[in-house]
Image (cartoon, rainbow, N blue to C red; front, side, top):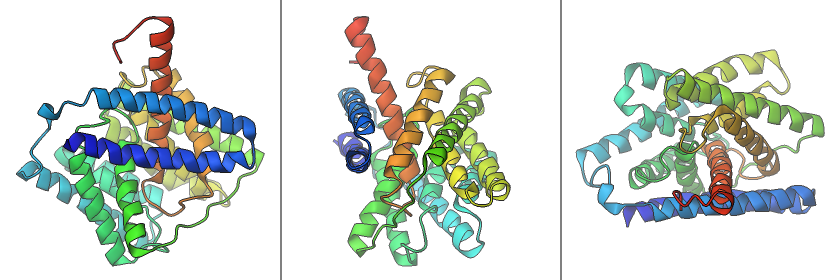
Length: 318
């Protein structure tokens, strides 16, 4: 039951972001609305596959255990450390999260995934969170991490979705308003998609081709993007760094989910489109990028499941 509950939380927020994109596309571009609705259907197919394969007998650990407590504290610590870097040391959110992930890989390898997950909470805007609401968001996300430990494994963006869940629930409890994001021009939109594809593919190459692991692959992209782009492109550099880092979460997927770099690149395009069409909503919430990544990955994975079932008779994923 615990795994179903964890999966249900993540699924709710994925569909909520799809809804935000659909609402914006409805009033701007009907063709894009049609595409987003198709992608949402494919993502729901993937969600169904994940739910069918849940096995409650294979939980990593009891929820009341030392291992669960360590995971909880690791997520919580990653969140606080990243928040301190961004708020008190004025490190940009992309570089801060990338640094936490890289340090975790190098010096705290057994806890790298949980620490990296926590770092996404620390990307939340201080305009939304004072310390107490942020602590609550961190505790909620840490608990959700433990609950959802054994679902959506291998799907890039899971960690960010966990962070986003805790952040969003905390804003509801404290009545915090979300920030409004920018509306992009056509030229900016094209640049976003190009940068998204690059971030996704580089992260995946580091993860799979060079066998450095998912956390390092994404964190390295974050350090490079957050450390360079804001200084190379004064007006749009931080936004492009955010896009590249967010797309790097796509590249954290394993080969059972996204089988090669070409598929990862296509998924990066989906991420870029979703980023553009949800930019107006839910600004300032840490984990939103990961949720967009997981939505993108599920869409392409679901499309592959549908194609194999309909045209190749492959029922192995169903």
